[in-house]
Length: 166
Image (cartoon, rainbow, N blue to C red; front, side):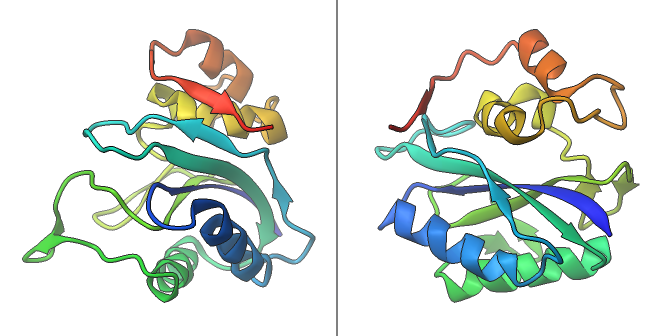
């Protein structure tokens, strides 16, 4: 069984309900109960949008190989209404979306393929990912930077606002 950490986000529709539906589906991929962070609101990162994101981090334990897990997560996104804007085979930048599920960490694996990069290549730059992840895995070591998630958060230069929901 591998420890896998995900980030879920939504800035369209019934955001909380979409995240709850996604975690329910993701829990079926886990051999142990899914661990989920608090909900956090954050301003869009990398683009401008009227609606802020609602984000959570999730921890699952699974033997599903990374590329197959990515496929499963993309299917969950699709079922929940995610539409990927593409140009040919390439996704077009950052946009508003009903649901987004990213694999942040997959055990201590380092994967760098056309379709999948683990650890997430911008994890250390994004407080909206680091803050919920630190809540559930603050001592977990990033396999590239060899620093804990809490340490990466303390070093982050991201100025984006992230607010824990009551």
